[in-house]
Length: 416
Image 1 (cartoon, rainbow, N blue to C red):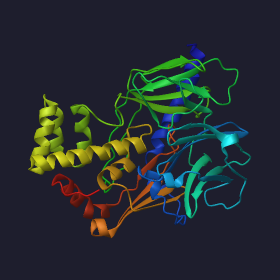
Image 2 (cartoon, rainbow, N blue to C red):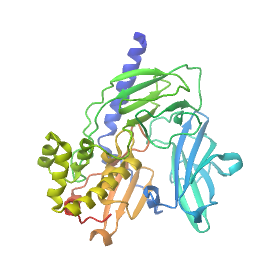
Image 3 (cartoon, rainbow, N blue to C red):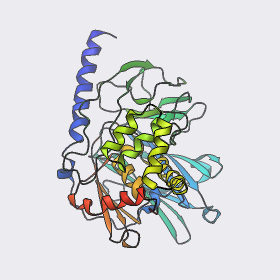
Image 4 (cartoon, rainbow, N blue to C red):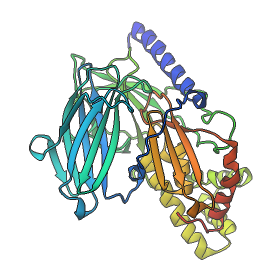
């Protein structure tokens, strides 16, 4: 690598990581007091929702290419109508563009219950939100997709793609040994991309009543840099975080994680130990992590806290089901269970109500399930690796019900 490139690269990455670290702190003061949209978006994180929609977007200075994966989980919803419209901002009613998707022009593949669509959208304003409405009879599901926003770093023209098809991967991770491509939807004359690898073990989210900043990541060190060619078939064996760029002078790029071959599930005892941090004392975690026989230590732990072999089996099954769902739903630059949203989802399950504004999500758990109504508020903050990074806003009031919920898990009485 030429020296002049190294200097430019190091300067660029230093600035990017400084912004990343700054974005991790002080988020609570940056949240705008906007009136929340009162549309319940609970279905966004419901694995059993009758209709699901995931998106991937590549952007240049004139247009955006949008891919959708629409999953129909119920025969009743076959033949849905899919319409879209873009607006300058989340709460701005001005329509910039709108349209309706059809199979002849936009459907690129049907695969079991999954329908894959592709369409382009002109980008003519400094900020832009896309809203996709999927309807059938009286049922309507709304999905919002940020295209250009003030809350995010510049969008990228890169997407993770299948090895032999121009269809994106719709999760933020690939598995060890899995083949894929990193494609530019708006290629230039560049003959190579640069990929930065981080082996950093990100810390789990702090408890929601913590008064310090939610992220205690002090430093993010680059372990290696390598180049790849456009359209090159890739397969990585080192687990961790990767960040790909075509232009190393910009802050635009694509990040993804490489995980073990059974992720989002955990299958080995050392991995099964880590998520117990949310329901365990520091002494218990220290004993678990220092044990020589992790499998035996794990079995002993569950029998000790549940005091029943039968109850232990039930709690283990439910707890790690929640870990798997948190990983599937919320993995971004770090594992899903380690994020604020993943932590709350793991311990409390699917919220009864979810309301979203441009820069926050509010999760509400009903009084019926929790004796009192519980609300968790997540603030969206800038993160160079993802446009879906939400931090849980800490509140000392959470202490009132947080430990009660942990106690229910430990006694095998938690109902999700």
